[in-house]
Length: 209
Image (cartoon, rainbow, N blue to C red):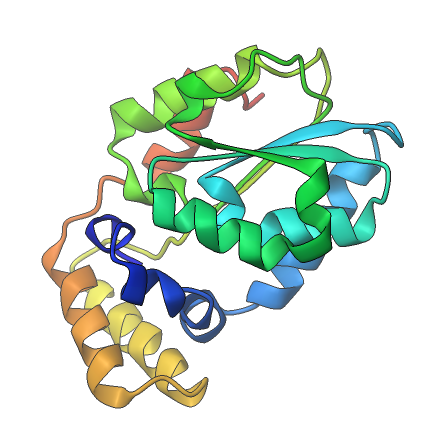
């Protein structure tokens, strides 16, 4: 979903369809995100999810897997927070949802953190600052799980990857016209999230070793 659509109630209502159709391995990503922090976080962990936990999807996956954990979700779009509350259902009692950015999150310290399919929307400077703010809120040694949408940006291969992006969406049930429009948007934007910039942002934020 484009950032400028996150305040549109109609677009937000359809948000859950997007990652499933446009992100290969999305369900597996959710499950693995629930597994990895559990290797080191305590049974009563507190965990923030930047980006509102993907409209509540990643927070729900974590809550389903860890009955003793409590969570905090932060998102600048109120409609996305409303979606997160609906998605969480009974788990909502264990989740604090905040309207704002990572700077508006509680100080913690938290036992783990997750940020899925969010950082690629941000320019490099904002990614570095976000990573640093997450790190500052984590206990020493606490795990952080991040995943981003990424593909090679070299001119010789970029068109092929954009075609694969649209083809996967259509094969997953997306409307072909919608998939082609999404391909066009991705193709028109020279992303600030080239692959080398990702690890650099993590290092800049103090999260990579």
